[in-house]
Image (cartoon, rainbow, N blue to C red; front, side, top):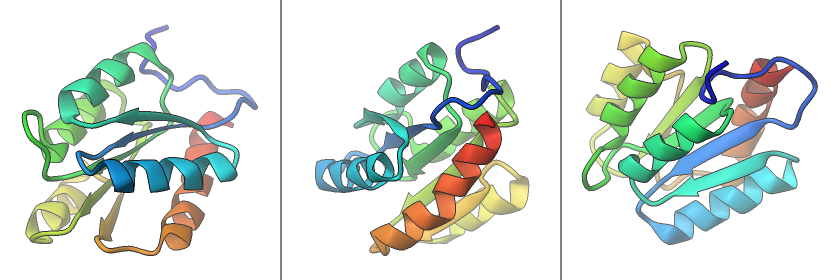
Length: 133
């Protein structure tokens, strides 16, 4: 089985967070860890793709605007490789890119920055758990 394919059992959900804003990356990481998730962090899409290919990831939360491989490109790659993985996108900019990803079925969730950390975690933790259970 490839590392990027979710493993179905009662394991702890794995969340990959990709954002070039280190403060947001750390806040989201802490929020998901508090909810009992195993968290992997990446400051860009290239690093996130590498983690995704190494680890069994259930949920990806990515910023759309990042240098190099952006969140939209990352989401397309992940969806193509592992259709069961839940994908959430976030942006502080134009919402059109996020809306397009949702309409295309590339992303499952969208959050506009600034967002409520509790709301994001409360929405996404059950999604991550649904993939790994």
